[in-house]
Amino acid sequence: MKIKKASKVTGIIHSPGDKSISHRVALISALSNGENIIENFLISDDTLRTLACLEELGVDIELSEKLKIKGRGFKNFQKPNSTLYAGNSGTTIRLLSGILAGQNFNSEITGDDSLRRRPMMRIIKPLRMMGAKIEATGNGTAPLKIYAVENLNSIEYELEFPSAQVKSCIIFAGLHAEGKTKIIEKIQTRDHTERLLGLKVSSENGKKIIEVEPGIKIENKYYLIPGDISSSAFFIVAASIIPNSYVVVKNVSLNPTRTGFIDVLRKMGAVIELENVREVANEQLGDVIVKSGKEINLKNLTLSGDLIPSIIDEIPVLAIAGTVAEGVFEVRDAGDLRNKESDRIKAIVSNLRNMGVDVEEYDDGFSFEGRKKLKGTLIQTFNDHRIAMAFSIAGLIAEGETVIDDPECVKISFPNFYEILKNIQS
View 1 (cartoon, rainbow, N blue to C red):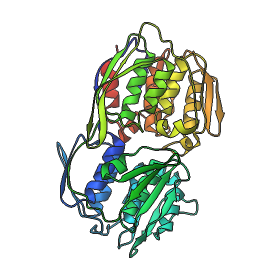
View 2: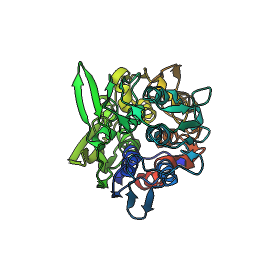
View 3: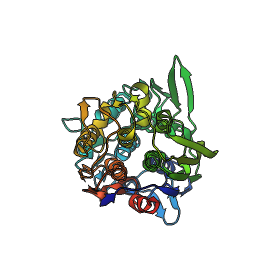
View 4: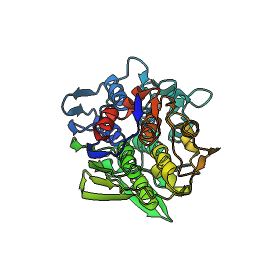
């Protein structure tokens, strides 16, 4: 894929369905009693892995214009005939493990080479505390072998580090446990699972407490999935860093645990407005309007601490914004970036260096001086969709031609990304 410099970006964008919500709605629908109808479900490699795993567990799924999932309840899944395959999807393997841990049959779940390198002890530890019988490799990675148990125990568990996937895994296991499970967050992470399930959430001493009652009845529903704010971030950044741009992203998720990057861009000086904000199925959504003037006058920030969990997926494209802004762009406390689909710190640093930016790399982040003219080069995606999309945006401001080595990897989350990118350029 070849990307050339753009004079501006303009247009109305309809972002694909939110990936995080799509995964969770599919899993919750499978646990329900009755047929669920889901509109704007994200059709991507990752979410299709979740659906394929559910079908292996005996869930009836019909995918046409809308997605239909007929739930089987909590413990009525069928034993799969073979190893469940999550592909590249960390959400699939971690959340589904919480459900499998409470079943009365043995199962095994694995993924591709990248997923088999990602850490799984973060879910294995709390699941074992609940009485689950689960094994990983000697390195604490997939494949995971999960054995039948009579019942799971309820626990009170404080997350050791902020992770919505770990939290959601425990929530799903807690639905199968005896007694009330409590999950305590020191730093809030995306909260789609507890919103969708309508769980009791409170605060105490600055910490968030989520309570999971066992065996709650999950009714079959109609779901409308809002647009994916993390996927929209690439176009929001593009319109913020290319002069004379104007982009409207319609009907996108505005969940407050997901809009941290918009706050960052506004603090940097970007002009971003929210309109038509409303609530559907306990989730906020609305339109994001971005416009830039003849000159780009952004100022860089240091991103660190409690902010990081709310912008973890957007750091690659925020780094691209940092290249045009004045001052030092610095990211710290983001060591978990190394445990994503790729080592994203390494991927960001190496590609920025190849584009002519002098970047300092840390164990938990990186920093560089902004106001740099990027030069087109060959971008290594490391088979990581967010790296591919972030550096495609970099190609829009780089001199010369930027070549993306593996554009196909965007299908993990945003199959029509390049089609939209082409349509908004001029």
